[in-house]
Image 1: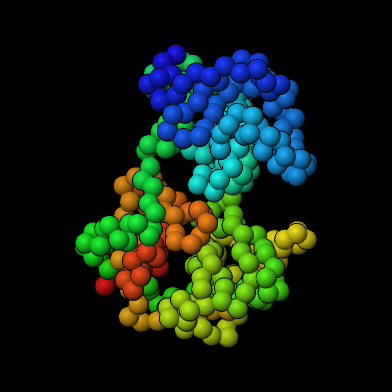
Image 2: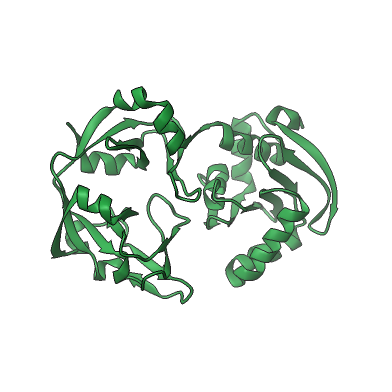
Length: 335
């Protein structure tokens, strides 16, 4: 196997998870190893049964292998299995495995750890399409592709370095259709945290309740947090109650309180709002996978795929975000 062509180096180790050889990626603090199936399965069981203990094991393993990202692979009967740990928000574990195998496999987890499984016969078909015969080589190639076949945009830097590019983008405005909003203090008390999943981020994000934090709900159920100042400058609020059946949401939003684990449906507190006229954005359609890291978001990121749109607010070029293609066509129109 020509692991060097994928920018990996071979590493030798003696560890309980596998006495053998692994590979270290030269461009990132990432290690890939072939794990002992019984040990790996114990870790997968912890994913559902004891997350605190799994977090301890994750920190231990990443420390042992001196890495921020650890990919374990093994075989179980007629399946190829994998488990991925991420110690930083720069890469979401669920999204990473989704890139590797999700088209034909099954992936579950969150931003910190995710597991995946794919039928060996299906994986061999995928490998044949890449002219590969070795499973580990497939994992190394796909790992390299994940990092290289993607634009990584730091919003603050991009705003300063691409002013003319932004100004050359087409301008769009929101259609006069209803959106919904929820004040975070209607969900939790000041300073308390809650967890929320969305169409754009399946692994979810954590929000701290406060008077300055609102939650927006789009026409398909897409969710994101927004500052009170930005909300008031962009939308006209109403007292109309959100009717999830009338809006035909594809995704019914709910939050999970931390640490109680109580689920609260946002439609109980959501009210309708409408875009203010004259509010515009710059936007361009993406031709490759793109990650946008917002300013002051602690390495949370938006993920865009080819066909989606990258949007920029004209009054703040550092306010850059991703809008899914279907959502964009449904909610925006050219100026």
